[in-house]
Every structure is written in C-alpha cells, then in structure tokens.
Image 1: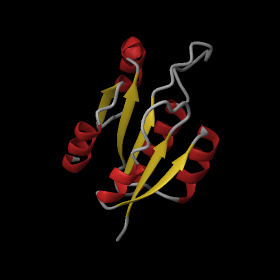
Image 2: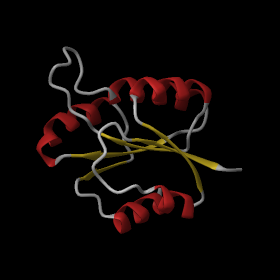
Image 3: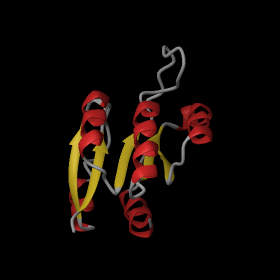
Image 4: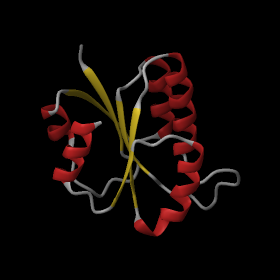
Length: 126
C-alpha cells in the first residue's frame, strides 16, 4: 500500500522536499490553496500532512486557514486511520501557533529555516 503525503505550500520560500518525501516511500500531492486541500481531504486520507502555519491577523475567529484543514483531518481520523501533521512556522508566530496546538493534535512543529535532515528524521520516526 502506498503511503500518501499531502504537502501544503501556500506561501513557500523554502526548498521543495518532494524528492526526500518520495525517497521515504510516500506518494506526494502538493497543493497551494486551502480550498483545494479541503476538497482533496474529502476524497483521500493522507498518512502525513506537511503544511505551513500562515498566521492571518485579519481572520476574526481563527488564526489561520489551517484550522479548517485540521478540523477535517480530526474528523477523518475519528472515522479511520489517523493522519499525522507536521507544521512549519515562523518563530515570530509561535504564540499564535500555540492557540492552534491547544485545539488540535499536531505531530510536530518546526521553525523556519527547515533543515532537511531534521525533517527527514522526524518523518522517519512518525
């Protein structure tokens, strides 16, 4: 059975880790919009999601679009296999990320800059 990894890159600005993900045995789907991510999660349940925490201060009732994604992942995990989630974040948004962590289970958070060897070690141990 192929393991599915969903890479969510709304902002980018860091290396493309797809070759490393594939070397670890994952089929990789990359999405750049949360709307497409939510549509995909209705059809597929990835074993792993790697996404960016994109803090959006203009949201009235949430900190980022990740909350919508995490709600779907949490609901899907109740119905089937659990999806692991790794979040990349800017250190200046650690406090806002903590609000997301208080509501949802995140497997690991990594501050920018992302060190590929560390990310590979984390994925291997998840």
